[in-house]
Amino acid sequence: ALLAEAWLLRRDGQALGVRLLCAALLLVGNWTYGRYRLHTLQTLPGPRVAVVQGNVPLPERLASATTWQGILAKHKDLALQATQGKPTDLVCWPEATVLLSLDRSPEAMASVREAARSLGAPLLLGAPRDNRFNSAYLVTGRGVLGTYDRMRLVPFGEYIPGRAFGPWAKAAVWMAGSDSCLEPGGAQEHLVLETKGRSLKLGCFLCYEEAFPDLARRWAAQGADLLVTLS
Image (cartoon, rainbow, N blue to C red):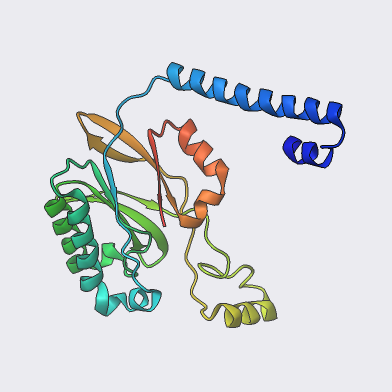
């Protein structure tokens, strides 16, 4: 803003000089403080995370009941490429990697566990849970270490606001193209990742939730070591 104002007042030498000086002081001050903070922060080596986005078209994911094998195989192949020859502490797949409840599909869950076993690292992926929640699963070859149920749902995408109130509900369902609604998750604990001889607490978000800073503050206040967003 100071530089823009300086340009507008460029014919007034004194005003121009004052604004350019203020802009320079702000830039130098920010740079100096940044250098100071970087040298005073105490940090520990973080986990090595591989992030995979398969970019599977929505129609294919909507048909997950028949296409889940191919979707999981695609993400597994991409993850193997990303982790080949590299020690990895966590592999992240997208929100709603498949649109079927993994807790109700033993065959699909077995495939996810096998993928985690092949990758040699815990796998964090999104999928429905109990046909009611948009969830994240933390999975190893041995089984599910924990789940996170999305707390902030997308209006008209995951639930219909006011669907219980008369004519509005019918119009809202028509606009959304569906009358199915997910449920928000309640109060939840961190997901816990065991790596390098220590336990890391993961604060999890699913896509739209990262628009709510109070969720990040809540995870941080509860001692989260790492914030992870699946999208």
